[in-house]
Length: 152
Image 1 (cartoon, rainbow, N blue to C red):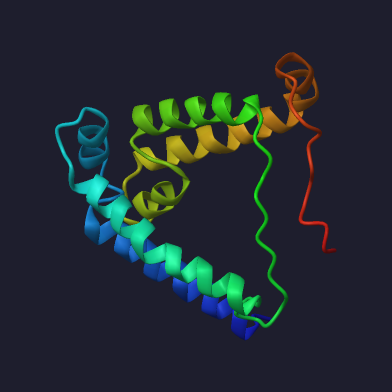
Image 2: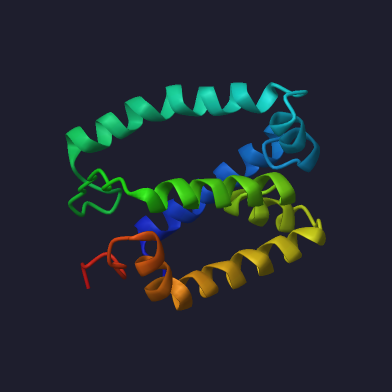
């Protein structure tokens, strides 16, 4: 059974996907153009998202509750060299596929079959990362892997 907060989050996610689709933020050509510095539309979209989201995060922190009324805690994550390696890997994958995780789902929803390959690559990569993390942690001196939110 779906709760009110779950339905609210699904509605917000669908709205976000619609905005990504209509704005071109999920379009392969716009994303490639952004990385090649030939299209600047996405830089404006990202900048607008930051300007609109910052006050929202501030309000969430001030109110201290989720839509469902549960306590909200937003903590800074510690910086480590894994952030750099992960950021590079994420950027390379985003540039090659023209998609990050959100737009993968938007492209699938738009009926773009090639997005299924990006989804498969994302799932295989995430699974491989989880399986190989103990070895990677030692190699790159990464912190211990925390699983879940710790809230049950």
